[in-house]
Image (cartoon, rainbow, N blue to C red; front, side, top):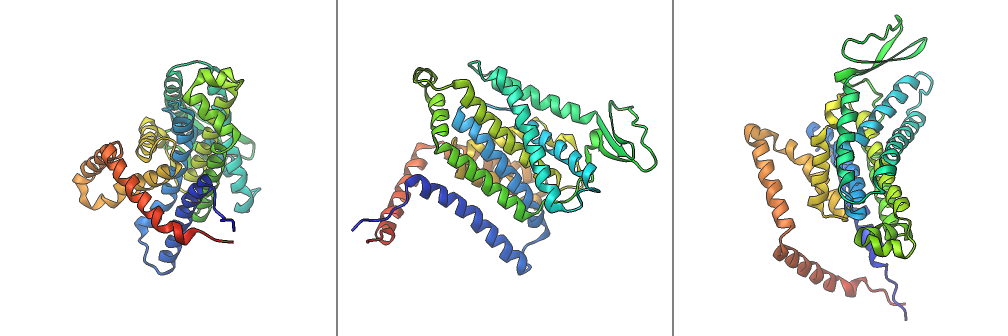
Length: 356
């Protein structure tokens, strides 16, 4: 009689999805019983945002093998594009169930478009050019956002650049983007449920892409560009596809983030944010989506959980981060983890086998 078993890749991805679903169920139970503090409630959407950012960056850094230092720039594009759309259309599209999905589409496509525009000339080259260009892109986007003024009145949209710029809004007008203050009063359409759904969509799309022919082509380029080119793989096409997809999901994270806060200043999308996302990817493991999920959740929540320690908060956070990095790259620790994992697999194997 044959035994029914899941493919190792399917089982691995299923565990990752289950972790996200279990987290959601636990949070819902804690919320229903009143056991969840306001501090934890405030962290739920940011955790989901950074999980999406870490998973999407891992597609570029871990799977494609290209270093990107401007992931927050794509997040910024998604946040601004979607917020402008939502605020300017909220009187027409009064239902959040219609407006927010459209805002997600606008933000994601805008970020993907910038990804294509950056990737087309740069991904044809070899070396660390992408890291340099994305670093510059992130800083340019943040600087432009800092001097952007956008308003709306009965005559339409008004745009201006510079600190002393005037938009000459009518009496019925209102500001949408106010320079250094950033995005003003985007509709609060983001919820933890929507954020969890977006995390799952991101994971499903990227993990299935990795397991597809396209994903294998991308990884072959990472492992040996010359060999991949010699068997007829279009290097630029697959690199651009992976990079644009990564930018698209970073844009979605920006939409989710912007629609969860009253104001979003451009300083939120600076170089430090891009580096923090990269740290999450490295800590979770290059190419490991499950690792990115866990690392992003921990590194987002940890500073807030240590807030009661006041002056020592960032010191302890830095020590934990360094220790985690050292343990993550320690061969003895990796060997011990593999032994424990193998032991549990051997114990679970008889119970998991289904005879027909």
